[in-house]
Length: 127
Image 1 (cartoon, rainbow, N blue to C red):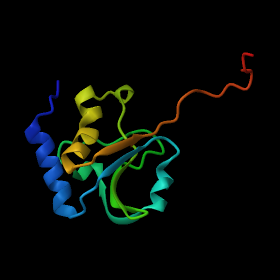
Image 2 (cartoon, one colour; image 1 turned 90 degrees about the vertical axis):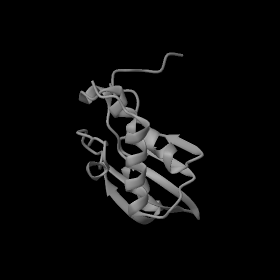
Image 3 (cartoon, rainbow, N blue to C red; image 1 turned 180 degrees about the horizontal axis):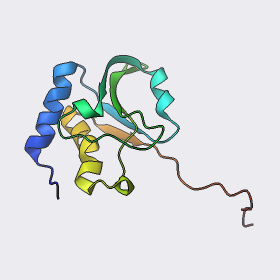
């Protein structure tokens, strides 16, 4: 069973810093259907998760699997364009790895989005 250590997180953060000198203050984790939000970011660097030591790649359709570093309305941001999930067969350490690594990059705020629920046209509001 994998076990993330401080050394693993530091190594991942150091790799990201080697690709960009941007110091993000806000992190954004973009869930299903929201990957295009990165179009609102002035992108400095895009890093595939597979290039980041210790990170895993998402197998979910629509999750591009990239860490985006740039500015949104002048604010330095790190945006995760998709993520990995426990239901994909990953251990919780692996699921949390990139979010924890964002903390090592220095973010002070984290916004997490997701697509929740289901669509069944026979459902009606309970009033």
